[in-house]
Image (cartoon, rainbow, N blue to C red; front, top):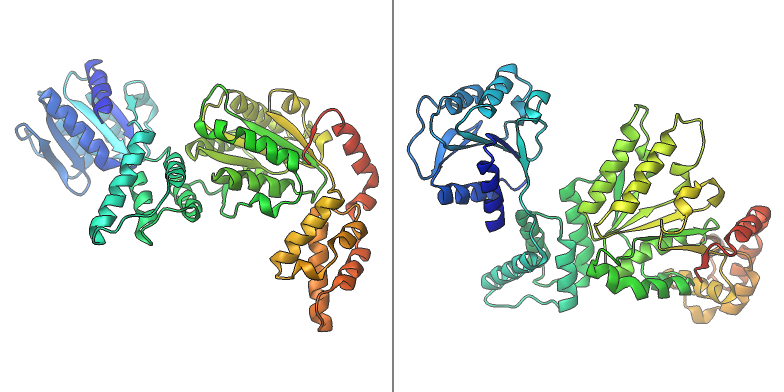
Length: 488
């Protein structure tokens, strides 16, 4: 808070008489302004539509009539000859009234006093924009966030007869990192919710913390929060990709901007496990996973699509550290001249963000049709690495069968996984899952247990994409040879 008071004092010294502060944490704004008024020996008055003008801090009563109506209160401010400090909370609904706008302009052009407008969002009319200074309260540092979590833990202990909150240092550090981007009040509320139900902060609490942060930031729409992130134990194969991520995990979580990993592109056949791998990145690193839906980006009005993308990327930075998953990115960035240049403008916006972002947002893009992607996106340096996800080999297919049999409470010891792997040559991971699902349905219909012959029968009844689209697969493999790193 000391830095905020100092910086606000510099704004006052610049003789700007209209200051705008956008914040959800009104109480902290008022505390900061009170501290500034005390330090400068100023009288501080606060207006709201419910209370009218009331005095805070030190100083005499304002001259004239105070009222709840914003026009009446602004006239009081305008005619105050003293260098007092006025704070108007939530005046934004009245900024389309000509008299209110004119009074604000006259105050801004006057010598005294100073008026601060505070709201969660404030869009000034054009005639006021160049007369006002915008100020943002500093967000809490990691040290301050750790203090907030510990204070909430201490309060819980006091209410529960000295019982200690159970946690470990690794989880505590992850909680602190995931609270970044929140205000003091928001961080305190999230920390309190983590602790209050069971008096513990565990790894199982992290998804709930991330979901709560997502809701506070109001990211619904173009961005969606993926609550269920996968573990790599649920992903067959991808050995090289797992090792690559493991080598870079600490560098990303440390947040060193110069060497921070920035993202990967996963290219491969449909159903090969790219989407599951994207989810597993977030699960492995213990980070929230956001999914960018390109279908929601596009708008018929000129410039709106690019604005939607910029807003989505800005909000992703507010959720940082996080993983941003762009699924089937070719559908949003496919080259073409039939869309009035929208795709090119979207591409330009995305490339600029990829090059300039400093926030720890790890981008995972997945693509099926690599030939539809613009070459600018694929050049070296856009992504840390380009991985090719091929069809699983025999060992990986056996592992995938084991995963899906276990998930459906079928004992893997009752099945010869090597026979299943050999019989399913050319199958993708998604097709193997559907083989198991089909066998389960068939067993229920025939009132028998799922066994090896039934699974083999289901395999033989399936025509995999490697057969149906053999030419496309061959072309994709030829493209990836020498251009991409094998994920498995």
